Image (tube, rainbow over all chains, first blue to last red):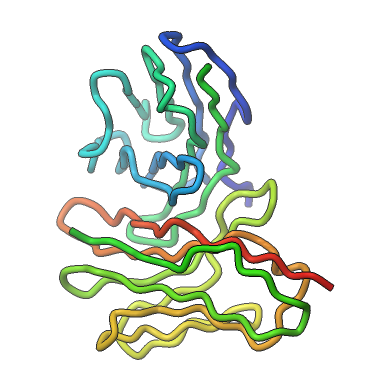
Length: 112
Length: 114
């Protein structure tokens, strides 16, 4: 089966600009996660969806980050406006209910 | 709160050497423990897991035992290969009423030379 797809793979923007990342989970996976991985650190959960409902967004900086999962399939993560400290790899993962999480290749964001 | 601490890298070994990467955790309740691997240019992959105390996870010659008394989940391999060069992440999941998120350590880079 196809894995988790993410695009773009790389993005370079200037601070205060906006950016959006897209994720297509594995077919049939109800749960979708967005993690942020800053260089030299482990991934940190930003938001978790179950179908199209938010389960946990306690670590999402809601003043600048937003995410949606329309129709319970694809998801988009947006940053507006971006700050220098948002430079990171953004990982999308999906799983069946309470199952193993499968990760996509990530989007590497550089904010100048 | 829940957290994972793993040894800093890089760990540099010669081929066929014995590998240990230390991992300890802090968690309430009974977490599941994981090792993920990230090969150069690729996404995170689950390497092995253990869901309860004294369980041993194993895969591709790697092993880790869930030790509740020492809150540890050290990764070991008897004979490493150049192809094992990657970044290894220890992680836990302590499911609560609303989330089964993974909490990761900072990662340990392994470099194996021929």
